[in-house]
Amino acid sequence: MKKRILFISIALILVFAMVACTPNPTVEEPPMVEEPEVVEPDMEIPEEPEVEEDDNEEVSYEEIKLTPMDAFDIYREEYPDKLVKKIELDKYFDSYVYKVEGYNDDDEIEIKIDPVNGDIIDTDTELDMDLDRQGEITIAKVEMIQEFLDKSLLDAGTGTMVDEWTLEWNEGILELEIDINLPERGDIDYTYNIETSELIEKDE
Image (cartoon, rainbow, N blue to C red):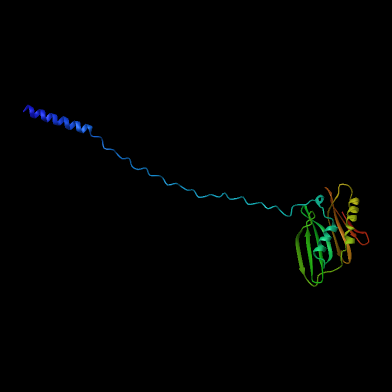
């Protein structure tokens, strides 16, 4: 009986020893799942639109480089078959432009010329067989414009300046109308018969 108990005791010890020596089962970690790489689309930064410069920048009287004769020549070079009937230095708000108008048997064409660089900035054509055709302005008459501008400024007095002028035919008379600006005093308008040098009118 004692031997049997001893045998059982030894058997239990061996069982416990074997259990104690058995390594713990390895717990496998779940495989690591790589996150997919997020590819961001190429974002192009929009370019700012270029700001176009205004071709018709304001031109003061002091900035004018072309003479009346230059404007006359530009027109005749562009339209050699047309007679010039009107030429003027016109003022739009605070900016100046030359306007030259000519004609032939079929039409009239008026152009606007930049008084600084001589570019033609606008063209207006009128087709009419019954257009008024009074006469022709020659280069010799255009050359006289500056003389009458100086004459008007001298009469108007110091501190005055030319505002605008127009040379055109009016009822058979080639008239030069000059608008002189008097600071803080208004304007004076002079009208001359450019062929006789007569002062037709002075309007204050």
